[in-house]
Amino acid sequence: MTQNVAVLGTGKIGEALLSGMIRAGWSPANLLVTTRRPERAEELRTRYGVTPVSNTEAAKSADTLILTVKPQDMGTLLDELAPHVPAERLVISGAAGIPTSFFEERLAPNTPVVRVMTNTPALVDEAMSVISPGSHATADHLAHAEEIFGGVGKTLRVPESQQDACTALSGSGPAYFYFLVEAMTDAGILLGLPRDKAHDLIVQAAIGAAVMLRDSGEHPVKLRENVTSPAGTTINAIRELENHGVRAALIAALEAARDRSRELATGNG
Ligand SMILES: NC(=O)C1=CN([C@@H]2O[C@H](COP(=O)(O)OP(=O)(O)OC[C@H]3O[C@@H](n4cnc5c(N)ncnc54)[C@H](OP(=O)(O)O)[C@@H]3O)[C@@H](O)[C@H]2O)C=CC1
Ligand SMILES: O=C(O)[C@@H]1CCC=N1
Image (cartoon, rainbow, N blue to C red; front, side, top):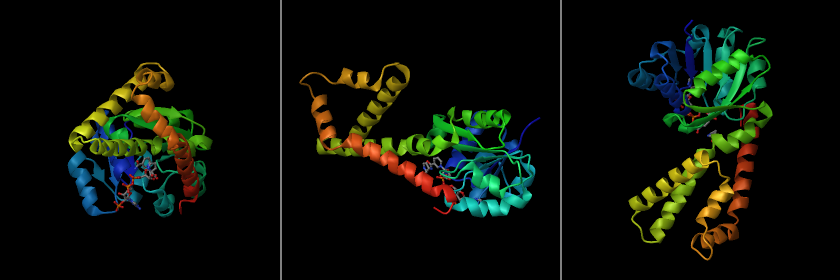
């Protein structure tokens, strides 16, 4: 039987997922979207051929509901949805921080809930989507979530207790790499390179390093050692990174992201 899937609150992540599902072979005829603004609904209809509906209509008619509003908007959305979601619907939350218990307390008893933390590389089918079941989600529900999110990249099952850490690492992760590229491009400017050339050099170094990290089977330390010649250039840069506490800064940064994810747990964050 063909399943209807509704994406509720189709912003950046919702659209990334939607576009990936269509690339992965889902028919737009089976995809519903909800938005807060009518012009956004029309944009999605025109761009993807999907059907915009109200939140209430989605709750009544879709087999699976994927909630991709901001954590702070989740309580309001659930107040609207709760009276209309039959208990057999699978509810997937894509929101940072909010535990599955938040949904279970507001929806009909025994509603299956799955929590997923994906990331924006879903736009290029290179997402990492970290998946955890709520109390009533079965193996079939998890498999269905994996089928959906597997269309936009890799998936990984973790206990829900690890979701805040995963949010800090991979949900927010792409932003740290963009930040590095931005800073290293500025360094290229300081060293006298034109901005476009500096950008291209750093992006290609990032792609090459990422592919080697994924495919070489080597530990990152070994890969870095291979670049770091005795009395060469790289070790001078590494010394400066260590002097400026970049390793400690990254550990503290990810800890702060994990803590913020925990704070968002109430949906009022
Ligand atoms: N951005 C990222 O990299 C990641 C985000 N996430 C999570 O994904 C979720 C969405 O983030 P993101 O896509 O960045 O945010 P966006 O603001 O781009 O998307 C949320 C969308 O929900 C809409 N919306 C809000 N309330 C309602 C409602 N009641 N009914 C219908 N639509 C509604 C908003 O409308 P309007 O446009 O009018 O504001 C907006 O378009 C968040 O919970 C976030 O934690 C997870 C992983 C990565
Ligand atoms: O910054 C945020 O809150 C969201 C969740 C993970 C990535 N972006």
